[in-house]
Length: 528
Image: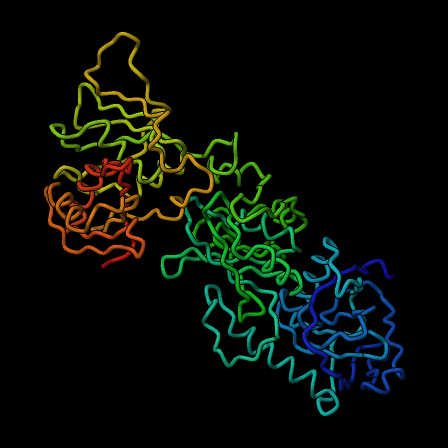
């Protein structure tokens, strides 16, 4: 019965290693004696190579219709995503190979997975089926090259652990190109989820595994394709692209790893070939049907120019993306913040608009009439409100530590027409000072937590360092350091404390410096 034959294609051109394959296959037959076969590069024609399939699973797989120049490494790469590869026998004259995995379970997973996807190796379909041999024994003297490659790849595979993108020794022997990509997300203004990555990268081939983690305060991921060719195509097409307008920039390299060891299926890691994995950490397990759908999914994503977003058709992913780059899709989460413990003698809607405007486009501000140390602030979307809350909760404003939480209100109501609310409510919906209204704005790339160092821009030529030092000292703080950029249109200015820098930003952002230049102030990640 040959019904289990499935088309697969994994692997990539990795050099033209000449084969010296030789081996002995041992298999139980009716009288329990061994069928012994030897083969090497010249006399493989002695071996018929045609398995008579009885449909029974085996940890030995028979691979047919291999391209002529295929290497051992490419064949081994077929099995790596599913578990340890323990042996290989190449029959080059027949364009066939036998691959032995450590367990029958791994072989079953491999055959089942490749029944759902049809990639190609060097534009040629490959056929995989269970062998009627239960074990693969090779003569190592005749099969030295294949064994050396297997050992090298296994060494790297053994070193593979979750979160070990750079943990493998530089000296580890790896193929010229890995099916695993290391992805870093720069300027992560909006959250990027594992599912978003899966959607984007699935355009270039079957994604087998993803692990996400944070390293050096940066969101990173390791993503494994079935075929290194797909990894190469994805890297060429996506490196340097923005997921959303002018933010969430993809930085992509090949990983030293050739296989990822995923232990749990949850929102941090996923093995699409193993829907049965536990979720770990008390997270809900991934529904097997969903996992299967992920494994089969082919994405409709188009990769546009550098400043336009990668279109994400999936509604949930789009909701996670917020408004930016995805018109008509509202962001998940509440847009209204409740800010409390304000200095009611000093605070105004304008000062809250300026400070919270560093992290999003403030639409409306209402200082509560009966509780003037509290205010409601409506942002443009849920991601902006989350960002503002994360960065400003616990900061000092006008001498008091403010508390920022999500409000139960969906919008901030304006006072009824003709009703005087003493200027406590203000609508900023059409403000020209919104930092994030313009698609492609560099402001998306310069969002940092409050810091003592401020970034100044739009400085006219006539304004000198001394002028700016004096201006900022007048906000009640001490200027510790100052540094002009080369063109003198921008500068860094350091106050004594973060609180002083917050005060200076509130007072001086959009300050008129003359010559039709309004000063722009934001927090900097740099120090002077």
